Image 1 (cartoon, rainbow, N blue to C red):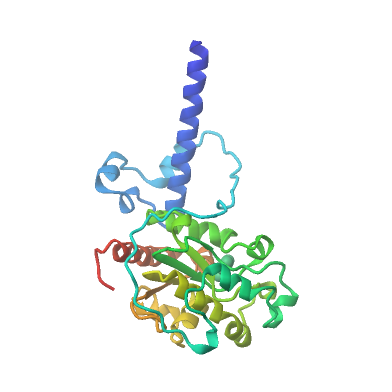
Image 2 (tube, protein in one colour; image 1 turned 135 degrees about the vertical axis):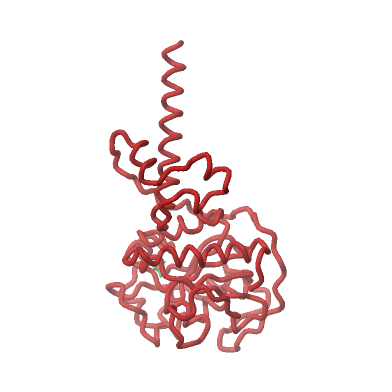
Length: 287
Ligand code: URA
């Protein structure tokens, strides 16, 4: 009996340590090495240590990190208060119908052959998440993992995006995640202009259905496609913009997580952008 209780307690402790370790590691992935930067003051006081120390101390024997793909999202709960966005103003080329749903758009997309990417892709990556999301993330185009699974941002960059979402105290299933191009360009090259032109109307329609309050665009192609601008991400990041097609929807460009994996020194700026997004959604700042 006593042995059993001790074993249960040890198991719980092990789980707790593992959980704390994962939590700390994602702040480290975001470039935050001091817990006080990311946690409320009370918690920061209670834990006045550096992330590396805790992660190392709590890991007596290195275990292989098993990366679970994010959960499949069916019909998530709406966890954020929805503020109405004014009526939509779509371009006629988007062939949107009033009151269409995401399912209608997916059906319309079908087994799309509107550009050459259909011949090399495995799956169309339509997008996923909360259809009533206040916050939407838009990336560029699926990579190999997304092409294989049919789901956006599930590879390494996707795991970092999930951590970024969690760092602003949301869950992946609270937000909607999509790409401006829905079929993988071979070898992960940038989408070509004709491919973007063929595909982006479907993103515009998704936005018109979801009507988020804020869209965080990830990297240059998504930012330039959505804002219909040639200005680059370096100038635009961290600055709220108006989504040109629907009054009232704001766009906040930031760096693409794949870029952050290559340039970790940029994570601090991305974290500043994310904090802005969080403050806006909480009504603490105006865009
Ligand atoms: N990069 C993107 O832009 N989108 C994805 O879905 C995955 C990686």
